[in-house]
Length: 520
Image (cartoon, rainbow, N blue to C red):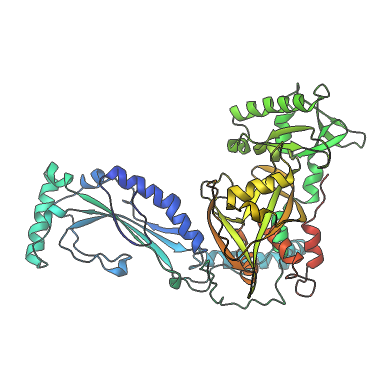
């Protein structure tokens, strides 16, 4: 494969091959660059001809079309003179998401309008105070990415850099293309150029996975709080829970179903009964005729398979052929098993194992961090614990911990004895998969300084060993880089090991309560 380096000219044998690797660049390489520099990029300019194929572009060439011999750096990418004439097939330009605030005039206009409304409507004023108000993320960062598509014609190379030789070669090239000379087009060589800024090009924000540059604004331990970590994972309020329908097996609540999902599920009248319970609460009951683990599991699998075939719920597009057990309490025998991708649809209490791998050094504790593979069906490319995984039906807590340790980080048998249970975190989370009342069992494992994790199941892109200060800064400043429940597990680690305590965390009690929410 063509190596997509940080910068330079990349040549391809054919247009199809160029398009193929253009896709690779956009889907993989640019994503990795974004993750490794903690940056996001927005497309600010695309030349209209960027998407044209070479034949489409060449069909419009005329004797007056300008042939280029060099390109200055002020226009994005510098192309020095090498005697070969070329056309710029297209350009794209990306700006750092912390760059210039293009919407500033509109924001100021809305602010003035809202301020005026506050003066007239006190109800609006009180409501506005409850909303989150934050400074813009824009800090006029000058970093930019430039992409050029260039069509070169080596067979028309000028003999020298003199204007006379260039005019002769330019005329011959235009004549060959306008007269539809097949040799002229066949000799074309498409080149894909990328100009990628280094970390030093960024200003005013964190850019480096390995080291954090000085932030322009102050960041004081005494005034910061990790409450936003808890709020992100607990994005389901009691009001929404009260509007949901309880999913029941007999007198036991097994799940909770969102109103939009209920309208579809209740149509499966051979499987479910919708009725009020003795507390006048709306419930969706699995019919009593399904009275064994096997019969319940089979009937639910039939319903979910039908829903998947009909493409009713987007969560089922992530079908994994992996099941979770459904419990009243985790210590009780499971009542049925269900496809993992449907756990949020039915709102069952799912569980997993998350392991904090740490190393004791002379400089203090360091924590191993994993970056999820870009091919993961959920949260691709985000930061994760060194080891984590859902507890599949038929597996236990310790069995899952050992299995995931070997698959995700190649932890040898002699180190698995260092695994220590460290409690759990629980929360109510909702996304496009549905409502997720989850419990994550937490473990710590002390690893020797010479240990280097190696992924063996393709689910991890790379590993980092970070000091605790770096972990705290990342959680505070770049929470969006973490898988949501992983951030909570790491915060729990900081609390248990004394890095976050009532004297340096103003919302300590609220945070501890928030990462241990009760379910049903």
